[in-house]
Image (cartoon, rainbow, N blue to C red; front, side, top):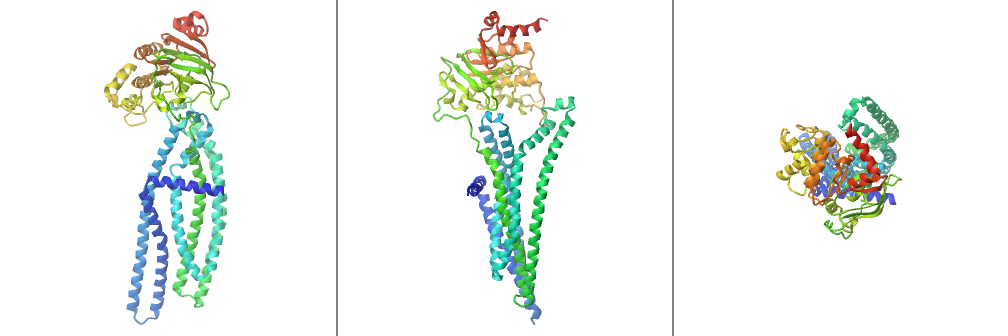
Length: 600
């Protein structure tokens, strides 16, 4: 019972989606289905009249009059055939148009859901499996279901017409045709379930093959793949994985094909047995020659329509199984809850930003990345977070941006818990450039403007941000200046150095008029002198605004108002640069270890 409800629910959900994409297309499709379903019966009846007229004309004395009637019937039969062809062409056009509209709409839905889910999901392999299955099914499965349902309705209308005609001959004919058609449908349903279960099980393996292909075809790994001659290795691994998947898929398909062959053989024998029965009745004079032709064609078409109806039902069952993959993704709920009664993000004025006994661990890990962290960033203060990789510095910033929520403790702005504010409004008040900043293969102007898309892409504002980041001369030296496409993905694109890309990312941060600015290792590709100049200018530009700096180079953070030293998710020291050096603790040890390289 539950399976039936799920099937109906999934089908209705898919049909609502198709209807929302184009009501007029859906109505036109239904009208065509009705016409196409009834035309075969008209064709069969006209064929009977043609054959009977030919038989009668053989004994008629007035051949001309008989041929006139025959010509009219043939003309009508031709008109029906022409109408069938026209409707079939219109149906293909409608189907193609609808498929394109629905496919584009499904990409919109997938993209929207991908933006809606929290960053936490990306830590889970199961999420990536779910996303992979959804991406595989979304572009075509709803349209496939609609086409299948359309054909099912059309074939059902034609089947009812044929069944009525065959019942006039003998009710047993309908029962026999039904009995021989059912096994084929059961075979398809059985193997649809097997294939669905197999594909769900093999999703991680399919993603592994996709990963090897991604390594071989993207610029991300291009240099290392060539320098270390990794191409043959990854090509071989891709072939091995794909070969394994191919063998298992073919094995299931072979079994399905053999089972379908036996079912089809039984149906074929039955049809010709019924043909012999019709021939016998015709010889006995119980039916006319036209009846023989009409009933035989009705049996053939009826068997075909019945087979298509049962296959259509099996197809709906199959589509339902695979639609579940899509809905599994679309039904994911964000784990970061929006407040039911949100409060505006406060302006930093008195207490500033407070981390109160904050602890955090990623869902996929057992250890705590942050452990009982407490610190305060006063309004307008510039602080620095330093420490070894994995100390928890970037995680602290992710919590501040509400990419995650703390496992314990809370973070407040002017006393208001971050969880009381709308997520989008909170993030609008924070400008962050992470170490793994994005490189957009768009124009230089757009690369900077993306830092604040709420404002018009004003030339002066963008140029000012570029000057502040020290990348204006680089941009002006490009072929088309700010209108130059960056990167090599598209025609006419020009590549930047790693350091130039970093300065471009900094320009994005400067363009955003936010209360809080965070720089998380954004200058790691620059030399120490260039990084120092960037941070010095940054302190000047960020005067009056709250800033958080993260850097491995301690010489560049010495100008911060307060430096926090993190180790194993805890704050082990804090103070000004001079205080920490004089204290002779962890910071002094790290600073001395770095300084000795500059003394040589």
